[in-house]
Length: 414
Image (tube, rainbow, N blue to C red):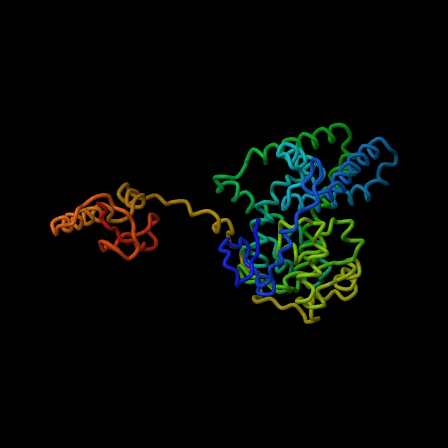
């Protein structure tokens, strides 16, 4: 867990999260406050998330055996969207203490959300949070450029879905440590459930299972448009207080498990959702533009996308893009994994596997030791001592062959 320390403190424990001065210079860190534990859960507030999923399953079962079943579709669409919000929170902050229970929980979220929740790791946590609104963010809002802003609201999710999927596949192929079994154990029950419901009754399956999940996927991605469009683009590693729009009304945040508080979530992604409102007031609101606090999401959508049809930033100015045509995505996975080595000769591969000139380097070490012995000093084991002893040649390079390495001197021990 990352901890913030006062700059004047002698504590040298590293801070895991780069913070702006208003937060870095303070001793207070919201992540230091312990959660309210429960018997099975990390945080007792997650009981409501579990209850929502149980109500979702019960409502689906009731609707399947009811007539007319279409009356339940709007309610199930909300439950699916709420499950998408719970999935987002759970992938940042695990819910259950036991790993087996957490795995079953994610399988249940996958069935309710209609998409493997493990994809949040690559499509959201590793890309959007680190490269917000840049070319390495496949969900950046600049991809939606219809003149009629209402079309941007409707079509933003279809516009970015393909790019997100391609980056997810590239991440799975390149990562040597990703848990592919977790992906498989979430996809298999989802496919089995879809096939089973379609076999029982295709129309009911579409109305009660497939459509609510499609709405959930559209809704959770469209919230990214609402919260980032017209806001500042933070530099890499920077926390910009104007990077996101926050919907602070009690109704929308109760329904979405506080997903309206977006800036503080970007600052502390692992902070539990139940603490986002108080920390937003404490750490974000005093420094942000007042126009980035919206109390009602519905009024914002009506004012921005329907009534005006205009696209403005937090200060009411028209949004302007840097280029007339949206640039291609950059591969964000390259920031985590090295490029695959190209075909080369055996000599080139052997040179890449060991430091260049390592044999000559060791020969010079031996010669220097023999010279010291001839001068009357006793030779022996080599131990590294910075700035003392025998001066070593600084000709070798790193094992990757990219940057020179400054070697530490050695001295002879008796």
